[in-house]
Length: 567
Image (cartoon, rainbow, N blue to C red; front, side):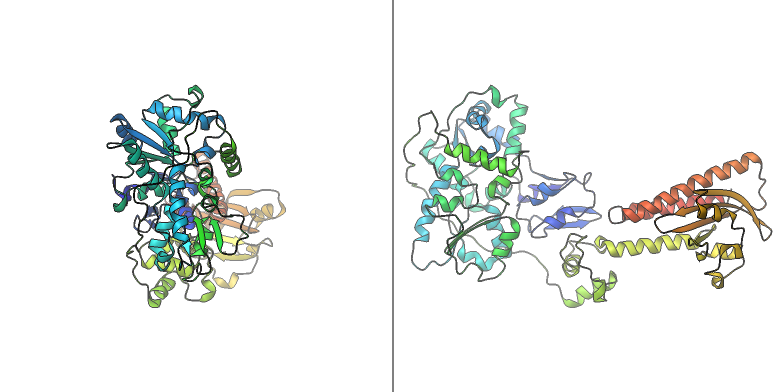
């Protein structure tokens, strides 16, 4: 099988530097390098949140359909279908899915709910033993990985029982005999890594998501509507275990109440709730049975369901399937397991370098945040606080440029520098035509200094062009004006959002201004000034998202204006 490194990756051509995946990753296992996101497989728990949340669909997981097809082609392959299938393939589709899988070549098709029933029996026995105070259910591989990697202090609370997938695979092989191979199908990405754990080698040969199954059926031209209704090749009745995908499903399968009123019994779902549950070493000490599911709304909210229906419709589909009475004959009670069900969980050794206060301060100094007032904790970078981001920078998972306020300040300074070094004279006025700012070229052209700041532009030059803008008679003015023995091509326009006027003066003294030449200069300058105005407005509106492009575009436009001087 492929290594865990191959399970989840980023398509660089689609990654748009939005930091959405960093923001939603519960363990911050996603780094940014050269404006591209990458997944650290050692830190990742494969919850699939980034896959669900990426707006550009840049996060993709390993496709194992060809591996499964090869296994099926060899014969004696049995499909283990997760109980959440009924939520995704609702109504009549649930009764036809077994036939579709047999058309793919599976020898038999069984429900993983059998494995859920088996491990529930084992869990019930362990929970009844004296001395146990907290028993955290371990059916969710993302939760197990989360505890192993980030909260090893809770390892002793994890029920040492294999997941329904592993239990069912072992039950299938015990029933169907030597040479049987198992392909698991469900909505979970973490199952791909779970199947690769050394202690489970040989139990599950391939893991597919419902999305992969849909693509496989489509590739083979198999449509559910063309398949006959048929039952599963289950070994026994599993009426209660079918609700396993729901929050509290395992507790109900244990025969206990899951109505959230039991003081010592708790079920929860969603990454925020799971993180809060394990936030402190004694957070579960007062609980007897805890059932955490990393996906919101349990397995119905899995990252690879492939369903466009709401979670409410999926829940209704599942409950309808659980309540229906099949006309097909069903076997009797599920036999007792005669294979091992217990396992052990160990702490993962993550290479997370320690970060000192001095290193944090170095990042603060680099991003101009030594002043506590500058530590906005805005979250635009994807991290919950400036301290979290600084820690990620030190560890190589982030870069200073991810701080939007800091990068915006850099861009503003860059724009100011371009304006200050432009050979074109640039002046800004308020609505009363008083001078607000001017660049060195303007000072040189009009032989003035900062003493004229606050005075009306008429103190230095003809104000008729600006008066047209002030009164609304024109939105933009271009003209050739004479002043101090020089000729200038003037472009003047409004910046409505800032309630300011801008004048750009290009020295055209000495040029042979034929009518065609003058028209050409006017046309070029008007076009470039319009583009500069539109760029400035757009830059203010979309700074956070297109910061780098905006800076480069601004520089390009100003350079084009500068080139007029040399014509």
